[in-house]
Image (cartoon, rainbow, N blue to C red; front, side, top):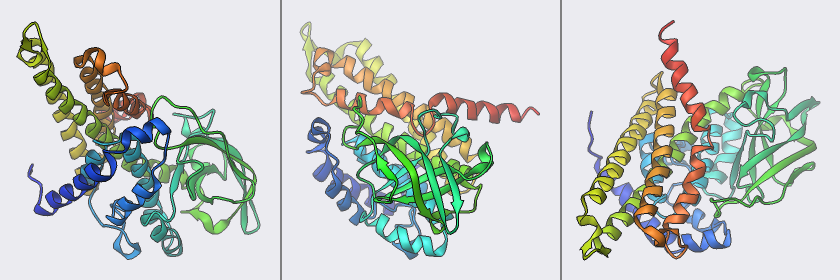
Length: 381
């Protein structure tokens, strides 16, 4: 067990931090205010290898570890959790194709994904099936050398801006074993995007529904075999949950730093706020909670890297703890700012709005607890 980063990891953190400070931090508030999706800034991130972090080198990936992955997103989210989270989702899609795609599919899609010539979306959730994903209704009926898709998807990040939509669809019977994974490319006839959703946070990335009306997709766009889609989806979510957990850490850590600075400078009753023991205790609790969550995320990343059988449980614990802690720390930071924290002139309310959804997506934190509890109880059998 070694808690020191390697020289290569320190250099990587410095590089990502410079990018975050120079190209994200000065613009993040405007992206939020204008609901602007910063595609060119994301392409600059891709030039640094950040759109294919854990992807194999033969298709242009950076070949880094899951621990490197969470270190990167922890830094990026200090400036803009929303933009960092989109890039995490994009990495999840690219990683899924890298792992489960054929040689032809990897060569066809991944070089364009790691360069962000292509943007991507992950499409599992439907209007009537959120946590009950195995009950999804969108169908893909085989017709010669094509599938005909009918149905819809909901809450899709990047919808309308993405070029590639990785969709979980029903090719067989009810239940998880009837689900397959199919790539739908933009401008495919029968494929359309719904209106842009108006959200509490995550303003720097678009979210919308997808609609499939006799949408004709070639068989060669299926990733993996028929019936493997649900297992593929769950595998991808391990990566996605780590990314979202890391984004919560980064955003909350920045809010903690702002609160620490503010309480050290703000005076009331002729003394600094940080001189009051009650404020000191709150800061100490915030820092301790963040550090505990960070260790859980790093532990889960390590478990994925070494292919630990319990990795999905470690990931569930890390996602639940980091996203709950992240939101709570942001909320505490806002409280320590008093009325100023509630103003849009100060950045904390933006982080609070962005981090709130992390407790919902990539599997709600209630579902994370179900995963953890099932593992615990199965050991009693």
